[in-house]
Image 1: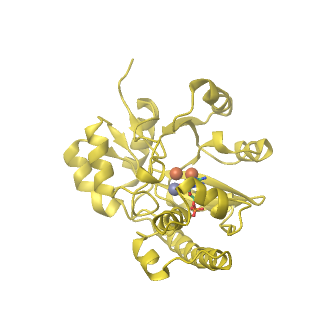
Image 2: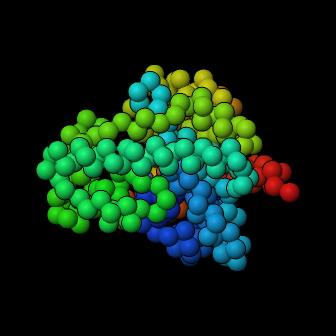
Length: 276
Ligand code: AMP
Ligand code: ZN
Ligand code: FE
Ligand code: FE
């Protein structure tokens, strides 16, 4: 059996992870990953910091990003890979996401204040790397003693249906796929195993995706099996990734799920064809 492992899903301090891009690459090297993609939410700033380090460590670093979308009122994540890092399509789209996220962040803080949770706005914005997200607010709520842990922050205040929940008001899957196509990237359905509504999953299967994230985080092989068979039936390639976030999701380790060598090679070759 091949010992090749490429974790194609993780987050850094550039979005809502707690390890810096450099720390993630160092960690990837220390656990022997041969390939890695940093898929921060709606931003690719991590790549500015770690291109040389990854080369030095002998890790093939594949460009990636996790886009937030809305489909029939549900929040859905897409992964994009193997696009050129200077793509204006991707960079402009990320800039639009940033504006959307700042507005949402402000609205969540207002809703929290209405619920007697008062967080230090300036301090909180300083703690955010590039892309504000709910985990930053959850961390601040833990630090200020409003909740005992991040899970409780989501359950009681920030998660869907909770008192300070604000919908993400993000872009459609179609619009996001269009950006990925124009940028020359490959589009992958992120963690289908987390999609609760089967009708939404079926919609996604009928759209213009290249791959599906069939191996995810710490799920058991038996739970993943149906997704692998759907991918096969539809001619989608299967990727794998941990969704490592550092201390925000303490149970998830980098490298706990991975992409096989043939699929990684396919994505890597596609990327090599994109860059001069
Ligand atoms: P946002 O991008 O602001 O909508 O926040 C979404 C992120 O919050 C996800 O990618 C997870 O990292 C995190 N998240 C969502 N729900 C939970 C939860 N129940 N517990 C911990 N983290 C969560
Ligand atoms: Zn996240
Ligand atoms: Fe996600
Ligand atoms: Fe993620």
